[in-house]
Amino acid sequence: MPTIRDVARASRVSVATVSRVFNDHPRVSETTRERVVAAANRLGYWPNGTARSLITNRTHALGVLLPDLHGEFFSEVIRGIDLAARQQRLHLMVSSFTASPEDLTSVLRAVRGRIDGLIVMTPDVDASEALRQGAGAIPTVLLNPEVQVMGCDSISIANFEGAHAMVRHLITLGHRRIATVAGPAGNIDAHQRLQGYRAALDDAGIERESGLEAQGNFTESSGYEAATLLLKQRPLPTAVFVANDHMAVGVLGALQDAAIKVPTDMAVAAFDDIPLARYLTPPLTTVHVDMLALGQRAVQLLTGPRPIQGPRREVLPTTLVVRASCGSAPPSKAAARTRWERRHAVAPPARGGLGT
Image (cartoon, rainbow, N blue to C red):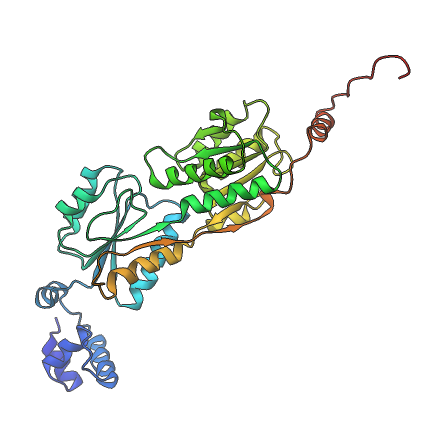
């Protein structure tokens, strides 16, 4: 196996210079760095990461812990983290955990000593005790935390504001009977989006109905089941706000199976703006979350200079992306009844009385 001395001899520099090259030391010229790397590649030399981390007290790796790794939302967040980490020549250790403090503590202990910093998304878990026990003094950035943790920077999504703006948009289109498919109970994102939905109705003076609030769990199947329940309401809602795009896929499927046309019979709007949203039929109106920027900003907070004034609390803004699924103003009751009768070949009632 080639050694660091072999690389030094082949590149005509000292062993100390080779060490500085592989530790990204600034006091190395670019010409020397290229010559050392070329020699190392030619010889098949790779520095001993374990030994190097013991000397420098750095692993050049970041830990990323997410409640789930499935779906476009999480893949985009990870992609943003990876892009920012690569720019700083950092590697990632990615793992998931169940929504329990005990599992989070176990995963944190497993990565301790192997990483220089930690990014954790904990919308369902109070992570304060788990981070104290498992992470120790590792610099940590929290994404969408259920509660703020002392000593940790955090980035949250403007869930309330985004949901409020979307429901307000539906109201401006003329909708008054607006249902919602909420996310799982105990999830901070779901709670804030539900609060935004309710506040928009309250601000418009629209009475809220418990029968128009269905529960989901952020999956497509739960969206389908929730929409099936909403279709039992009489009169039907003219619009539905769904707490994330994945559930909206299920909602659209349920409406299609029930011969409810979107947006003619019912408008649909959601949250997240995953890449798939624009390719649905019809294209989905949704609240845009810049998932890539969320991941990139987390790395910037983690690797940048630490502020003297204490942990930073940032909120990622959201924007509305209006597509075909929300349509325009809902039809009048008479127009809707006539269209339904025509579609199902039901003859309108005959007029009675004299002179008809």
